[in-house]
Image (cartoon, rainbow, N blue to C red; front, side, top):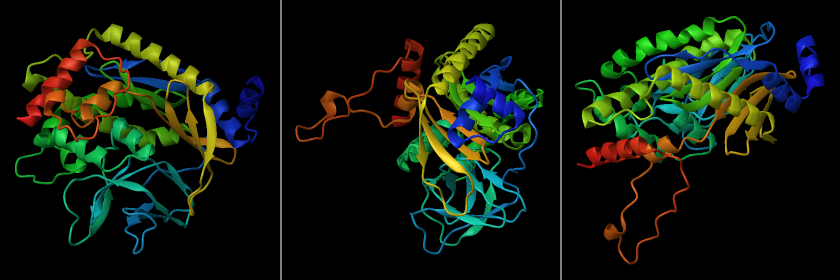
Length: 377
């Protein structure tokens, strides 16, 4: 590990898998930034890191392929003269169907790539395609984790169904975009986002660990601070609108917000989770993933012993992006279909899936029960 760290500090190109571990070894958790509902732990390098010459989504354009390799795929084109990073979770409004990009991709300059997506709406397809635009919010980590695991569109439909009544008056779209940009949620979420965006201004910050109500949702690590400035605001905004929806629903249902306790204690709890998450990643198993034509670099999948999954993109021996998705039993239960009690099952019905052991406290269980029961009425 020491050899890898020295090589990284000297700028020596590394083998792809070594570059992932070197990048993790070169960062340490910074001081948590805490708002009422959210916590972000900046990931700070121990030394300055020069730009690796990669841009965000600004040079990218999107269109629907005439004959997609897989249903709902989208073609992304890079009109710039430098590689551009397309983050998994990027929400695309347009075409005949709004979409969520499934995984991170590094698109080569002057090239195009056909990438996998999940639908971001439960509406029927539009009869007439409309121009694509990139939404200001990247999908919450829960949906990104489902897309990363090859989740079906039902994951998105269930997520949308939970918060559909937050849409602006007169807005009949059954889409993630309609919910994420609803006035009620943005009035709550934008001030939180602005406070958390301070993390991107800390010297040598190359990523962050984001938590909602004391539960870590995900980790993003980038190849240089430029990519942090390009992507972190959208990542934070996507998670804060989900936090806002949970808070407003808790108030309407008359139940306490899960894990919403003392700020100092919550920050300590998240800081401890951050250390454990980084420690687990350093010993995670890695395997190479198939490359997509038109993209650069090598992609690796990581899996830690506790079930945490991650995806890393490496180019020229340097880490470009690392997206990490810890298990969150609260959100798995909140967004999963309701299991039928034995009294509602018929003799010839298929058996209900056996739920995995999940560490939920009484407040969380009560919240999920009240919210789902309220939606069923």
